[in-house]
Length: 219
Image 1 (tube, rainbow, N blue to C red):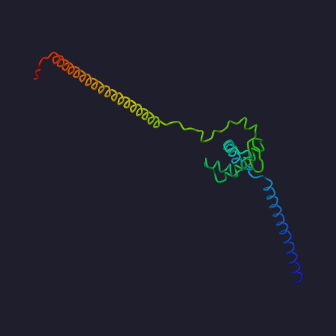
Image 2: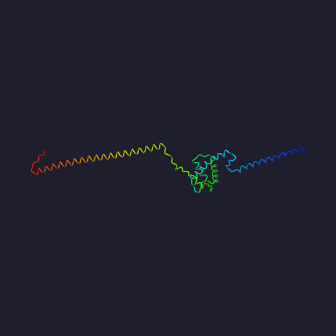
Image 3: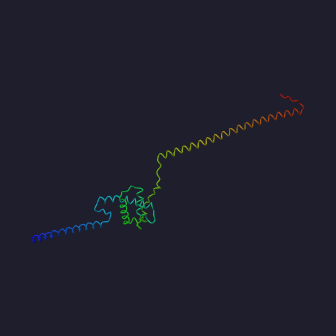
């Protein structure tokens, strides 16, 4: 019995030894995996070719949005990522992870020497400003007049011309009326002058007859 007990105890010890070794090996493997995961920087898509290819295709678009935001805001001290994200979100539909992607793109542009980072703010370098065509502000973009607006403008022009013509006609008619009244008044004064002259002639004849002592007969 004592031997059997010792034998079973010895076999139990032998079973525990590989178990402990397996646990240590698993922990070591897990630690190696975690260390290798930490060693990759955020946004490294080397292990995923599809994501890397997609990020490469979106790079010019993100660059355009970033340069548009910085060129429009024009802060001499630089623009932080919150202001850049807010500017782009007001004008474009962005994905949920847009802030993280934009942060990666900003860091990439800084490494490429296209942007300058000062106290967590980003601004375009002077050399880059000389080569980039400034993006026009949205307020400077004037929409082309539509066909309906052209019709309205044309109708307003016709109405203005018609009103001007009517005013001139009314003014001419008024002048014509005044001229006609003046002619009538002149004719009336002329007739009055003729009547006055006739009366004076009669008075003169009566006076001459009276001077000669002739009698005057009134009809």
